[in-house]
Amino acid sequence: MIQLIPQLVLLVGGAAVAPTPVFQDPQSAYFELEEAYEEAMADWREAVGVWRAARTDDPKLEPPASPTPKFYPRFLELADGGAGRAKLWCLTHFHSASARRGMTNRLRLCLDLVENHATETWAVEIVEALGRLASSSRNNLGTNVAFGLMDGIVDRNDDPDVKVNVLYNKGRSLERSDDEEEVERALGFYRTLRDEHPDHELARRATGFLFREENLQIGMRCPDFLSQDVDGNPVSLADYRGRVVVIDFWGFW
Amino acid sequence: MIPHEKELVERLSDRPFTLLGINSDSDPDRFRAQCAELGVTWPSTFEGSTREGVPLAWGVTYWPTIYVLDHEGVIRFKDVRGEEMDAAVDRLLEEMGG
Image 1 (tube, chains in turn green, brown):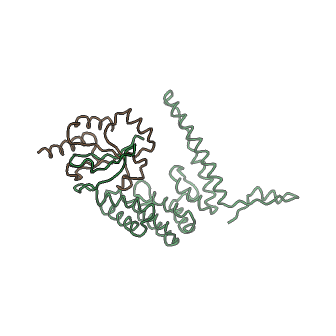
Image 2 (tube, one colour):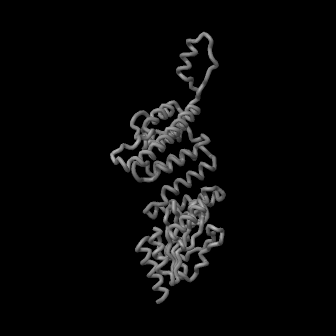
Image 3 (cartoon, helix red, strand yellow):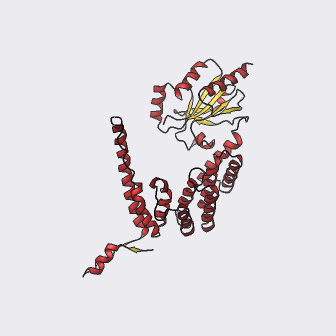
C-alpha cells in the first residue's frame, strides 16, 4: 500500500509547477520512526545515567521519563494505517507505553498480525513476541491463546524457520513451569525440534535443555565434559574423579 | 558468592573436595584481573559466553546453576547456595570417610 504524504498533496495541488512526487510507504515511514525512537531511547539512557549519579546528592530528584509513551501513538497511527512492523512494535511495547487508546487491545493486534502478516519475511519476530506473551504470569496471553496464534502463523507460512521458532518458543514458555506436565510438554516440543531440524541453531539450545532433563537429575551419574581454562589448558570433570565436586556455573558480570 | 566459596575452598583445602567453576565471562583479561583481585584460586573453565560450550550443552539458562556430586560422580544436590552448599559438601565428605 502506498500513502501520499498529506502536506505534499496540498503542495502538489496548489503549485503551478509540480515537484517530483515523493511517495512514502508505511514500511519506510516505520523505519524512519523507529530510528527516531532509537535515538530518543539513547538520549534517555544517557539521562538516566546522569540522574543516577545526581541522585546520591539529591534523593528526591525525579527520574527522566521514558520516550516510549510519547512514541506509542505515532507507531499506532502507522499500525492503523496497515504497517505490519508498526503493529509488532505496538505489541512488544504495550507494557512500557501503558497504552490505553486506539488499537490497544493486544489480542486484536495479535490476531491482526497473524491474519495479515504471517507471510512477511519477519514473521519469526511475531512468533518471538508471542513467545514472550505466552507465559501465564502477569497480564500475558497464557499458553493456550499464544500457542493457537503461533499455529495460525505456521498454517499460513511454510518457512521451516518459522516452524522451528514456534517449537522453540512453545518449549521456552513451558520449560520453567513448576507443573511437571507442562515441563513434559516442553520436552515434547524440544524433541520434535531436535529430531526434525537437528542443524538449526535453536535445536542446539533445545538439545541442551533435553540433556539437562535426561542426564542431569539428582541421582544420575554426572556426564563428563571437556572444556578449557582461560589459558587454553584442558579441563574435564574426569580430572576430579574420586572427589566431592561442586560444579558452579558462574560469572563476574 | 565469591567470598563464601573462597571460605569453603580454604576450609576444605586438605580434603578430597574440588570447587569447579564453569565461567561465562567474555573478556579473558578482565577475567584474570578479577580472579586475582577477589582471590579465585579454584579451577574454572573459561567459556567466553553464556550461550556456548558447557552452558549450552548442559542447557544452563540461569546463573548460578550449581550441581553437587559425591565422590562416585553421582549428582546429589542442585542449586544449593551458602550454608546449604556447605552442609551438602560436608555430608558427602562424611559419607566418604564413613
